[in-house]
Length: 437
Ligand SMILES: Cc1cc2nc3c(=O)[nH]c(=O)nc-3n(C[C@H](O)[C@H](O)[C@H](O)COP(=O)(O)O)c2cc1C
Image (cartoon, rainbow, N blue to C red; front, top):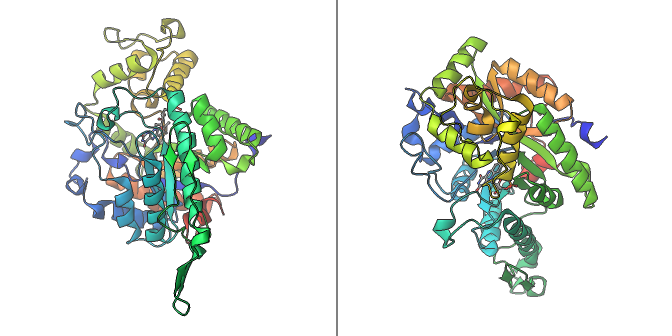
């Protein structure tokens, strides 16, 4: 059974998003929010993640700012993720650096060059989170986002071009032979002459390949097209899996699809986002969670439900159950099929009340797995998911406070190591060594 196969050791990444400032958490005295755009902020967290021996730190990214959300939080305002990772590279030695580049908006030649540059700058620690993006078209001369099928068709061609560009200039084609005066074996630096449905790229790349390893590919987006794309190319999938059944279903399905495309099931690792609000006691963790939810924007939650499943609950009483019979026909276009399907599934399965629905991760938390408790509680639940064969690891999204984020790295991760579920030392110095080795 491919779905129930478990991994000996989990893979763990940490989002530098920074989720521990979400909600009202940035207003806390100790949030250090003033340093939000200072690279030292991300460097400090990355060094802590490296001390915990995590596989990677990760920057999700968007190419627009949500001005409607800006009065109450960062709303996607952030430094360029790849430049930020270059700064983190100089202050760390082993941890993987996963940056996000959209296949909808970037030219593949520039993406290939930036990623290979980051690999040189970091000594083999670059990784690429391949996204087809949710928004931002107006910043790139497009009246609307291309349809999902079109975005994934572009993503497949884009990724193929990037990989061929990386191969177009082998590292050992550089001879730098002082004696003979030959700088490079130019015959081995070859054009790719790509002419496809979306891109025409001659190549070769103007950066040689770094080392003998390769840059890990991570993908996000779990529609049918997204899954097929991931099964073909991704080393790991950043998943939205709010419960163990959703994670297990995705993992079984991706393993099957990978096999169908001639890969091994283990080649695609499923790593759900995991929102963690941790404190020394359960009561403190619950209080912290409630504190960060205070003043939550109900209007935005209602709008999100409307956009995802077409249902307007504006005038509904808080205690009224939302049932599958209430759902109108699915909207023809949604920003993310992954998120719309997860919300629909929740309503069909649980018939939550309006009040319950408005705070669910499917509505307000990108449908991520959520744990509120002690570090030991979190480690126990993660062990349960791992033993059930539902995950290969997770991407930690610490929430609530800076202290909660530190607790993830300094207490929860060691608990997982004590259970034999995570490494206590790095076995190599490249991202591929940690994730693929
Ligand atoms: C867990 C998760 C994380 C994502 N992260 C990003 C991101 O950082 N930047 C981005 O532009 N899009 C992001 N996306 C959007 C996806 O790349 C994709 O465009 C979107 O989910 C639509 O594809 P789908 O229909 O397969 O869900 C993310 C999607 C998921 C599910």
